[in-house]
Structure formats: C-alpha cells, structure tokens
Image (cartoon, rainbow, N blue to C red; front, side, top):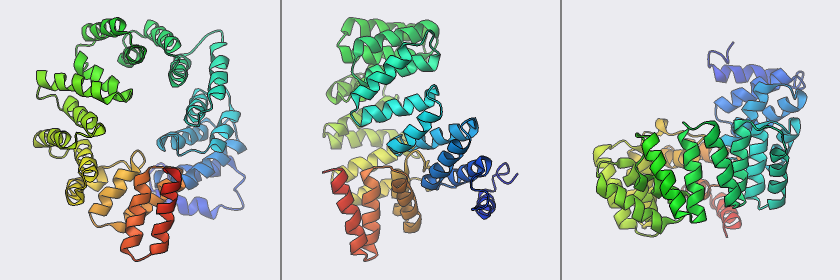
Length: 363
C-alpha cells in the first residue's frame, strides 16, 4: 500500500524491518528492491531484485524490474554475473537475450554473440523483438548484409514503424550503399512527412556511425536549408565538437539557447564544449542555468552530479556519483566529480583514489 502511494522512504523502513526473518520470501525481496530503485539506490536495488528472481523465477514483475535497473545503467552498469543470472532464469526472455548480446559485444566476445544469434535465428518463427535482436546482433558484429536483411524483415512486418526504416538506412550507410541509402531516404520522406529531412537524418546516422566529418556536412546542409531546425543545429554542434571545431560548435549551441534558453541538452552540451576548450568558468555557468530537479539521475547521473555541484550542493553530487559508480557506471565524469569534491574538502587520499581508478579504467 505504501509503495502504491509512493511513500518510498516509509516503505523502505518496513521492508528493511522484515529482514532477516523474511529475506527468503521473493515478494519481500521484490518490494524491497523496487523501493530502493525508486529512491535511487540502484546498486542495492539490483541485488534485491536479483535475489527475488532467484527465489521465484516465475515472478515477471521482479524480472522486468531487474532488467530495467540494468538497462537504466546503460547496461554497462550491470555486471556480467548479473546478466548471466538473469539470462539463466529464462533463456527465451528477449530482454535477457538483449542484455547478454550487449554484454558480449561490449566485452568483445564475438563468439558468444554469434552463438546467441544462431540460437535465435534457428527458431521456426520470430517475434518482432527477436527480429530486432537479430538486427542488433548482426549490426554489433558488423555483419552489414545480414543486418540489412533483418531490417527489411522488420519493415515488411511493420511498414509504418519509422525506426525500422532508420535501421535499414543506418546499415546501408555503413555498407557504403549510396544508391540504397538514397532510395530508403526517399521512401522515408514520402511515407513519413513529419520525419527529419534527408540531410538531417543522414547526419544523425553519420553521428551514430561516428563519421563526424560527414555528419557535419549533412547537418550543415540541413541547417542551411532551415535555420529554425534546432534539433539539426544541436546535432551539428555535437558533431563539430567531436572533430575539435569547438568555437563554431559553441556558436550553434548559443543559437539554440537564444530560442530555447532552458534546453537541458543544449546547456549540457555547451558545458562540455566549454570544459573541453579549457574554459571551466563558462562550463559552470551553463550548468548553473539547468534546474537540477529536471535532470534524470538514472539516465544521466554524471550530468545530474555536475549540475548539483554547480549549484553548490556537494552532498547530493557526491551521493549521485557514488551510487552510480557502485551500480557499475563507468562514466569518467563521475570520478572527476568525486575527486574534485574530496580535493575541495582537503581529503587528498580519497581524491587520489578516484583519480587512480579513472586512470586504470581509461589509461
């Protein structure tokens, strides 16, 4: 009842009191994990939800929440052990397969990725989610011909889904299939009149493929055609920053902010560009314009921590960064935030600990 009314702090008190007497009850572990998740204690939530799944493999609510917690950490926040445990509960669960595919790809385990794809492909019939997994897995393995075929299978099944057309276009771009890409973009323009124009869409695809020079050319053309296209302009700024054209990138960020001064994406990007330019005060000014309560701490804990820090709330910034790192988030900015906080407090040893960890992960 308390969980339903979102009184999560009280709910946590009660579920905590039920341990250790009822820690082997799946429902108790599930409620405890859900409560911890909702109050932002992701690392502990993952442990409780995993335990709930082990106690009752048929508990779909716990399994779904466990997968969501891992996914919220950009999947990298989930350990291989957690993913494997989740997968073993139900090897046919699409979310478990997706996490395992992503983990295998991120760790360079191409053999495991290929095995999973073979198992899915061998099934007599495929759900939409399985087709998506087959596309994703082949794309991760850079099997572009196969990825294109699975994208076409998705389009055949659900022709009105724009993302499936984007999947095909992305693969054609990676294949260097200029004629095919042009045809797909033309079809998108006719079928989805509200979709970004071909230059804008092509630029976004180039960003996904990390081909930033091409992205700048395409997005520049999109902005030249329509100077009010703020989404294309912010993407252009991102692509320019990626190739070191920082001053011009910042000009485009400012153009967006003149129209939408509270745009969190633009303010955050402006801060990153200013920081990369060596202008820490300007980077801080951008962050101060962001309302910290409007930043999703689960999706972007590094930004949330930096925003709270810019507002002078070191305690909250420390809590967010520590929780994210505990949950397995490897964003270097989290370590930098903590190192800065501890240095400010005169805790040199703790600051050094995070800097050493940062160098270890990102030599």
